[in-house]
Image 1 (cartoon, each protein chain N blue to C red):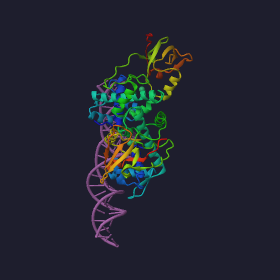
Image 2 (image 1 turned 180 degrees about the vertical axis):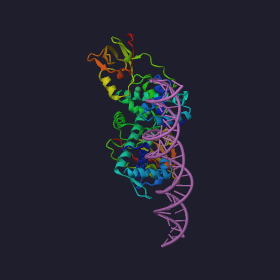
Image 3 (image 1 turned 90 degrees about the horizontal axis):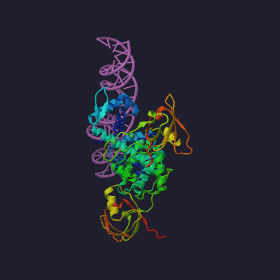
Image 4 (image 1 turned 120 degrees about the vertical axis):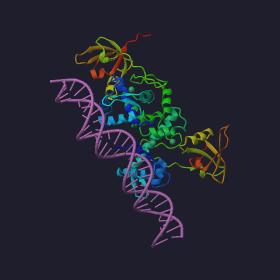
Amino acid sequence: MMLSDVMEDYLKAIYQLERGHDDRVKTSAIAEELDVTPPTVTSMLEKLEDRELIDRKKYHGVTLTPEGETVALEVIRHHRLLEAYLTEHLDYDWSEVHDEADRLEHHISEDFEDRVAAALGEPEVDPHGAPIPGADLEPPQQPTGRTLSESAATDRVVVREVADDDPEVLSYLSDHGIEPGVTLEIREVAPFGMFTVMPVGDERAEAVSLPSEVARHIRVGEEVPAE
Amino acid sequence: MMLSDVMEDYLKAIYQLERGHDDRVKTSAIAEELDVTPPTVTSMLEKLEDRELIDRKKYHGVTLTPEGETVALEVIRHHRLLEAYLTEHLDYDWSEVHDEADRLEHHISEDFEDRVAAALGEPEVDPHGAPIPGADLEPPQQPTGRTLSESAATDRVVVREVADDDPEVLSYLSDHGIEPGVTLEIREVAPFGMFTVMPVGDERAEAVSLPSEVARHIRVGEEVPAE
DNA sequence: CTTTAGGTTTAGACGTGACTAAATCAGGGC
DNA sequence: GCCCTGATTTAGTCACGTCTAAACCTAAAG
Ligand SMILES: [Mn+2]
Ligand SMILES: [Mn+2]
Ligand SMILES: [Mn+2]
Ligand SMILES: [Mn+2]
């Protein structure tokens, strides 16, 4: 089955929207995600349905079939391995890798995928902390923990994942010491959802305030006691 | 100017056919090179002419404009840098890199190009011995020397470039000790154009016979006296 | 139960890059 | 100098992925 890169992007988008708890994914959600109009999405969904990559109920959204999910996971594996490779071996900053990976993900061979994975030592997470699907293309388990925006003042939390693709936001965060693995002390939660946090362990760190749109994309977990 | 990857492939093909001494490049030559039908080529040439990337005289072929040549050189730089990177850093054999590079060349950013070039130390040739255009995109000078098929028996020559893309042929050649840098002793030139050569300096090397189609793609130069 | 607003699909169009079949041109042979 | 063969272009078609405008369905509000 030969799929265009556009089809791959639709399947990836549907997968990610499904994980976002919209268990049936709506036309308008896909249109927004991929920045196309709803009629465009409808016609693409018809093609994906013909190929049995999605289940569709007219007017009531779609879900991926197992085959569709496998394709999506393959694309996501490519994407995240590329992001990891670019930061590890080509000196990219984590804020810069997304767009490059988003184009290349459709054009690398399975051989390339294997070699990149080997060069990295079969990594389990990408530079943003997102899990990289294994070569078996089983769905990685849903990340545990909560988002920063669901946390309370005075909590101490560890950043697990920063699920944002905007380079501006990402480089702002890393400039202020926020990246996966860092411990944060939550100083204040303002009523309009502004979180003020303080990276722990860095002498020169200062408190940073993050609006809820940003806090919502930061997944955090419990602080793990030093082993 | 936004160019599709298909347009880039046409410009690259025209560039390479121009270097092959067809100073005006014919529709049929491009069709053959890119494995499409002549009417397909004609309609693409009309588009490239509209964008002033080629000069076209109906029924009499095309030449690249300076702008078209720059695009072609950019694509070729991508291609050859990728080939070099894949062999140097991802453990590919020189016989395997062509197809991978041929797809990726259209999808990497200028930033990626720069980082790959830096990681390789601004290399001047790709793994097949072909010159890599510089970042300035000036045309590299035409390679000097002659092809193996233009050489005579008893000559000792150094392989400069193996200008073949077929992985089967390339891995056959490297299995028999023939790759850029190797010195060959020409043992025999059969009347039907079969060249029998012997790699010098490798104990276990045996003589290899190469038909003229293969010998024509091997560029050789004078043996350089050890410095 | 009816209305209506908003989301979805249908209808019709367009540009790209490919094809086949048919018309046309150019250059070599006579 | 005319003819013919082969290369090239024209003409018409198709699949893809996108769009806008219009029709249609659903579900929530009244
Ligand atoms: Mn993509
Ligand atoms: Mn990522
Ligand atoms: Mn290519
Ligand atoms: Mn090469």
